[in-house]
Length: 222
Image (cartoon, rainbow, N blue to C red; front, side, top):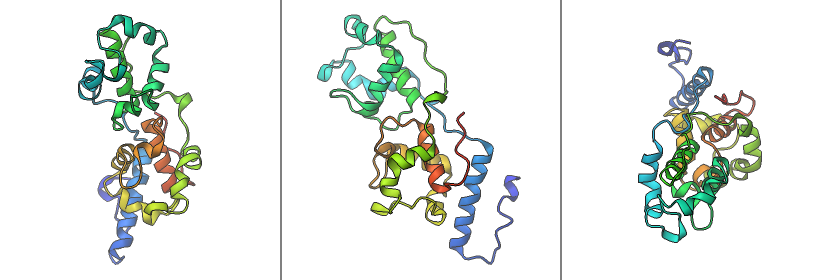
């Protein structure tokens, strides 16, 4: 469908609320048809993430955080491998909060920060490209059943109900990516990433897409 004519089918005589809902539905459908996927960390390098989020503890060693440049401290951690270190950073460990206290960071941005600190401390790791791990990606249905339904099944705290397109349409007025980013950061009574710190950006997108239309196609995995 040509974007210039995407809304021609909506009768001008319809009420403003119906037109808003219809426009929101078309916007989401168009986004899904295009196969748009939220970028996994395309905006920040490891150094940028470390400067903005990690340096406050890892430069001084606050709360036992391994100092950047301390090969002795980072050696045992690096031996665990990137996957294990990333999982610890995503879920939080000891006094470090999930996502290093910055829930807006994508999984790949967290990985890049870890790699940057390891490399500054004697390692020779390579920063990952912008891609997700398909085998680890959970579907929207799985995530909604496991977590999101706790509020979205009965509307707790004003959460839009699963499958209630009229309730979801206003939340999608700025586009699917904006809605997903809001869910990643948290808003209102909903915590960042729906209270599951280990959700990838793509998984958050899958959950939002499923709740808008449980019978539709899940967000593409690439």
